[in-house]
Image (tube, rainbow, N blue to C red; front, side, top):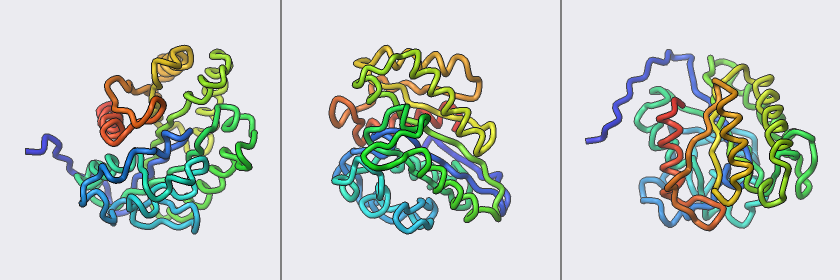
Length: 247
């Protein structure tokens, strides 16, 4: 028996918008070949923002789940991330019995400076492109009363670069404030990162301790695709923990 039983309390004009931001793990390079047949089917109840045509459409792994996630161009049709397990909970009506909306706005290879200082990465401006997409999304969903939650996965590339941990923390907190200035004082969930980057990960935990509406989710025992990226089961476990944390 499935241990999760969810009952929607949302009214007909209430919807959930989930936003995923950050570096490559915000997009994901878990193998689509690890997915079941049912997981690869179009998800009519989970609408993803297609970043190529700027419309919402049924999310389908291998079709539109990773489009225009810059830095992962070679993986657009063969890999996936958090959306698979998000869809699992959505099918159980965790976010309500009506459709849920998903905006994956990550950019592979980005550091905190690309989200706060406005620096370009490989010709793309992650923060301004996110803002443009968000503006269009809020217009498209203006008829609904929205519950908005944000999931962030960032810090590995800063660890690789040797970004000063204190600077990373200050800029990350600025980024969180900037996000909330756009969508309100919402709950935010961030993934911790691998022990290889413990100095940065310690700052993510400090940010959690100093922000009552932000949770840094443990990644202990999350399976890996390689040293820096989670795999099929790893992303499932991380979303399970985010759900347990209160998403």
